[in-house]
Structure formats: structure tokens, C-alpha cells
Image (cartoon, rainbow, N blue to C red; front, side, top):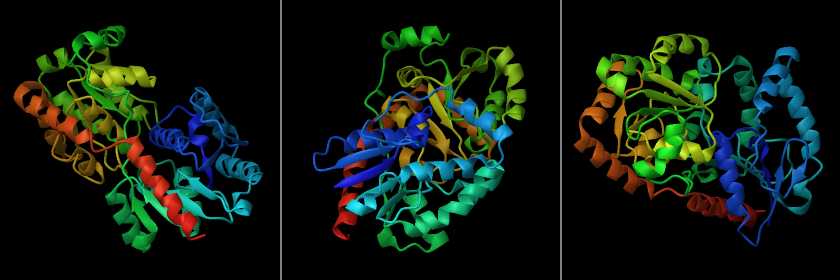
Length: 379
């Protein structure tokens, strides 16, 4: 079986789509009956790259500033490189793991992680919404099979686009073995490096952008008693997104007081330790197709405070505290419960660890191979 996978997401520091693409590619390489080729924007390779270009985000922002319609120009150029390896001539399957497929005459498997630009267009840059609206419908109509990360997104696609249920499958994501429970001594070197104390901080992970709703987490944290904030800082991990200026203004006094710590983007090893050492993870996202950070925290035995909307209840289940992402009081109450009720926190931590065992990248890869075989049998 020949499979072409768009691995362009691996060129940037890995966020959700990048993690999905990387673990899918690594897992597929273990199958002897598959010939896997990765597309990297300007050519093809059999290598699964694990060294992102750290400055690529700054390069993209610079190009957008000086060149109009950067995405469309880039897409045209990438399409020409993509065409160099026509899998349709050898009855190969093209898997697009990132929403928008290139033009392709053969069988297409398309992964749709969410419909956030449709549900919440105001939470995306206008050019992203425009490009998604322009190309997504065609990609979806061309797909032999569609994969989603959750049942919630599968249902949305069926309801919104009338896609036949036989053409769409929900395959949950997995979590790396890197994420595991750590004790105080095991986590000490990394925590010390960042000035943190074991189980003495609330953690928020995600790109600083409107959809992640970190502003609600900030406002909720500000409602906590001063003594709690003094001994339990809010630690933010993630890259800057867009429209962050107002968020930064909100944070400034708390940053100055040492009550908010911004760690920025972390390498995976450090991230795993920072998560494992946290008191709790707060994830008040307004909308998610899956939500990897909550699962990563659960796998470390760290209880989660997460939104009660979209796919997040599928991941967290009854192992954490589910909150209304628009209710600041609700989020603040959950934070205070995790800090002041150790028995509730301990029970939640054990439930989180137990539930996390239901998710794995091996299972995700095996189920994806099942989709490939289904598509192959119908060719």
C-alpha cells in the first residue's frame, strides 16, 4: 500500500496538528506493508522529521506583512511540488491531516480536527477564515473518508454538511509515553530551572489566542484570595497567537507580582515535567476538536479543570471538574477546590490516570490503518 502524508506541520514547533501528524507518521512506519512518503512543502521524503524550524513562525509573519495573499501564493507553489509524486498513478492514498487537501486525482483521506472557523470565525484571523471557507468544502467533497478526533466533531460535520455517516469516522488521539506521573525529586531539576515548586502552581497550556479563552482563566485566577495566589502562581505555557495585546495588559500586574509566570514554548521533555509537577491544569477553551493538553495532564496523574463544551467531556469524562468556559465564578470555584480540597484533588488525580489509559497513539494509528485498508479495498 502506498500512502502520501502531508507532513508540512512538522516544519513548525508542534502544536495539536503537528503532534497528530508526527505520531501518525512514526506509527505508520512500523507497518511493513505500507510505503509511506511525507510531503514537506517543497518536496517529498521518507524521513519523519523531528526537528522543527524554530524561526518559521517569525518568517511567516514577516511574509504576511509585506506580501499580500501569502497563503494563496504558498498553496500554488506547494501544489506544484506536491504534483511531482502523483500517487494516483500507482493507486496510492493521499492523507491530508490538516483540513485542506491539495488537488489530487486519487483516493483522499481527510482529517478534520474541528469546525472552529465556522462556529467562531471572530476567534480567527480574517485571512484564515477566508482561506478555510474557500478550500474546505472542496477538500471534504473529494475525500473518500473523513477522520475526526472526536464524536462531537463527527456529529457537527454530519449535521452541518450532510455527510453520510459511512464516510466519516471518529478516531481519538493518543498521548506520548513521555507523559507520566513524576514525584517531587524526579521533577525538581526542571521545576527549579523555572522557579517553580512541586504541586504549588496552576498550569494553563495552549497558544495565546481568543479561542483558548485564557482571559477567563486569568479573571478567575484574579478572584482567588491573595494568599492563595501568592503561594500558587498561574503558569502559562505556549506560543503567542493573535490578538494577544489585551491579554498581556490584563496579565501585566500579576506578572509583575510574580503571580503569573509565562514560560512560552517548551521542548516536549520540559513540558512533560512542568505538567507532571502541576497542582492542576486549567483548560477553559471555548471550543476544541479534542484537547491534547488535558489528556497529557491526565496521563501524568494531574487533575484537570476543563470546559464542559464540544469534545472536552469526551476526553476528561468524570475524572476532572467540568466548568462553563464563560462563567468566571465557576472556573474560580474549581481552581479553589483543587487547591483547598486535597481529598477531592487526590480522587480526581487517580480517576484521571485511570481514564488516560483508554487513549494511545498506537490505537489511533491502528484505527487509521483500518481506514486506509477500507479505502484500498474500494479502489
